[in-house]
Image (cartoon, chains in turn red, orange):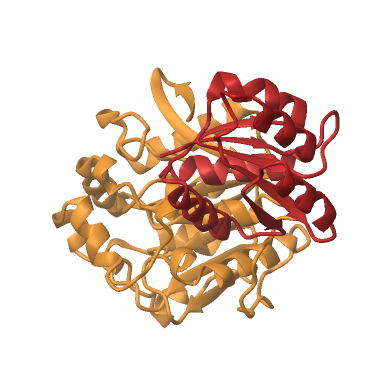
Length: 125
Length: 262
């Protein structure tokens, strides 16, 4: 079981991701934008952070930049949730330290598999 | 975990999605969890609820309430507590019996129902359901099947007595008559290779109302929702999309379909 922080502004998707990962055995904290995610990250100290690319208040890119600039949180793997056509933002996110990305749309069972792979890769499972 | 106190005992449920209410009721072998893939698919258009019945999953082992009527009352009180009125009901095995009894008792609260692995009478049930421990039933019914880890059955949490009592209780209910008198659109689904609840024979299927329709999953056993998930989800989606009051008689199994998140 891993602690996962997700930030996604679309409620339906946020709920579905939370539900799916929670019942796959993970401890999930959900935020509705990048600013909330940055606020939560030091409190939760998750094993994995999943950020939607485009969100109000603070984008995934900006949130990633802030998380990676902090000594206490820079080691936490960050994964982007991106839709097609957001390649530029994803690339920018990778440049500021994001480690991977998951392309939307995705099927819930594939999400669980992909998260397990990423956690394994970073020895967090 | 979401829970309610109903009649002084804990009732566990989970909910996902937004839209019209859709209620899932599990069977004799398992808990709410094996509905997860179906809830995920349905959540795009519906608010999908699944609860654990008395003696199953995380709901209290309220031993004095292991009867079919108590389960119908539990469902009624659950819906009342949640403020839900007109529902689509999906039940499996025990849950199918409870769903049918509920629809017969409270017809005005039900819009349609899908009953999976529904036994018309006790003789349709394998004797192993009452003789084997739930964990052994799980191994038996899932032999050769690969199911998602997320949808595991949680049989270790079942109070065996809940299975035994409710099966004994089937002798007191004329399910065939209830099914024949049903006034709602009803889709009956059965896994052709179901070893726990045998396929109903032609005689039992006679006299079903025009609003009822049966579909067989030829490659499934007891859990078509887990073994032919995409087809099952597509069928449910098509059934739920029908106009209220319309018979599902024209529904058929379609090619695999996968709900995707935007």
